[in-house]
Length: 470
Image (cartoon, helix red, strand yellow):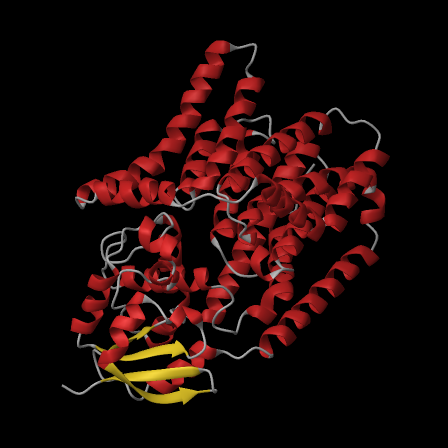
């Protein structure tokens, strides 16, 4: 059975853009995206990640954004368009995986549509571009290459999973799921199990080894170990388990109509020899991803974007199986298109009504900053560096690294020394901050403010300070 690859990919791209275009124009949806963009700018200026600029993520996401900035010229709208294209690519790969697993094209279409919808409804569950929508592409492709097909490509799957891992280590959950599937698949052929397992593991380790070799060449292996391993282990985990389970319950309630659609389709369906093992594998992957997400003790919605592909694969397989003929009726794609257009308009209305404070700051500072001069935001607004094309005067781009105690302790930041670095940097001409934000009252800000004087207020909430004359 032939599958209209290019038509499906193009349709998914148009669908993703239709659902997400309303969020393309505001400068900040989530400060994590701002950090990826600004650190990528610094890398393109020749700075080295984990030496000159520092964050909690592996280097992969910053390489991705550096490539996207080169491709788009750095336009926020075009970067969001690129993120929509990544979501569409993930949907396309899900459709391929589902088609390979079920041999039903319509199941693939459903899986792709479900994924785009799940990524395009809630701000912190996919509308804001985050690491998950990027590494999902690699994990989905790995499942399509090794699990969903009879023509197993274990080396390719390993390379894909390893590449996803250097974007975010949570990919270890999918890697373990694929590895356990390999053991089950070759359970009666121990020799082949070992051989194919070595291909999978070798492929996985190759990208990781590449990153280690890069930092070894730079003499920064100790920094790589500290920021990749020790910092993560230094965060306190105090969230009780009942709140972690509540976190999962919130996810399932948010997407209950979609999840229940798959459950109803499974209950109503006749048995199928393909879907039993496929559903069991998806349950395993869902369990492992859930464990990894809950282990952190953090309740960030974007962590659960990693579950979106599994839900989409499950719903696509069973809905396509239960209502195959119904889904080919003409009103179905029209209904999907109507929902997409409506969602895009809702996003546009929502974000158009929000003040774009970083752009206000950029408009204020642009005519006042001289050549080589920059500024320092006291509480957020790091995307303004990108809007003004100015360098960052501190390695710690995300403002929370300098304002939250658990970050400063985990990163072992000497706040007094960091404040002095900024004071001594005469290129830092301005400070910017929200007047009534408690985060403006930090060790850094208390050290900096005596060296600057208020110059003006923006919108009644933002204040700009200029450096005192020598």
